[in-house]
Image (tube, rainbow, N blue to C red; front, top):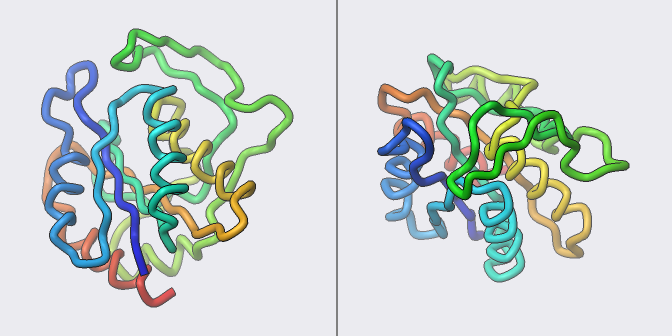
Length: 177
């Protein structure tokens, strides 16, 4: 089993993205293929889909910092919209734009409530309107078109605190699913 784990690099006022630090810490696991993506709508989604095709992971676990989050939260839904007052690192500002016209919001196949209860974290039905949500939506959409599709989950982590124990516990659970 191979698990593709991603996080994001710096953006805006987040010079040292905790999701990048978390992904680097998880990179030592034998079955983890870890990558830090640019916080760019276009480049992050394209890179993720290319990695999914190249690595053919059983599971994709992506992390992003949620600046208002107090605990790690597992995301159920990727909304088909970009809407954020912050430009990405390429200067791309997207306000109330669909990601893929004609698509509904997409949901992970994982039982988010059970996973969250097992690792002691929260859940969310809104991955936001920034690059995190965009990446999650495009990753889930890519899985719809991939013959040997794996599964994907997105987790927002707070800007402060240590989520490494929860992330390791989540990886252990995902290995068994």
